[in-house]
Length: 169
Image 1 (tube, rainbow, N blue to C red):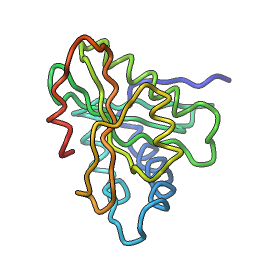
Image 2 (cartoon, one colour; image 1 turned 45 degrees about the vertical axis):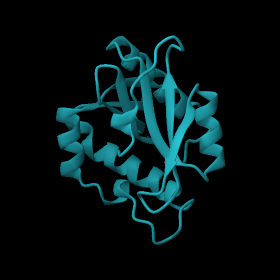
Image 3 (tube, one colour; image 1 turned 90 degrees about the horizontal axis):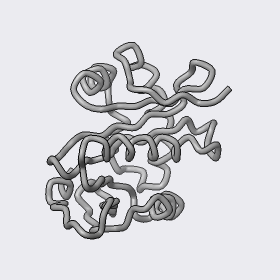
Image 4 (cartoon, helix red, strand yellow; image 1 turned 180 degrees about the horizontal axis):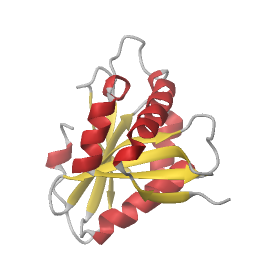
């Protein structure tokens, strides 16, 4: 059976929280052990609130949520992607790629000119992955206790997008 990507519903909150926690536990292993990670302290109430106020997509296989992705508009031209989560027992099946592609399509549909996201700059496999999806490193910072890279995917080179709203996310 093929995977289905759809907009998250309130009833998906627990499944989104579960897959996010599992995915970010793996991500956390690439960081210094004492580094706090907001995704790991997220609550069911947080996820429910975000479903009602922001844009969240899930991917399911056999009616089970195996991944999720979130984005919000930071300006009419810029969207910020965050909490990309894929069930760690299902990597390598294109789930993350399907979620990113779908999310970028939706961002373009609302008229944005670029999408941005942060990730651990030392997580080579993940950084290389985002390069392969058309993102480039805009800048780095250490505001979360580790070196994060701000990756940007600018949909057109003939238009400069103000990335400032994404810098301190």
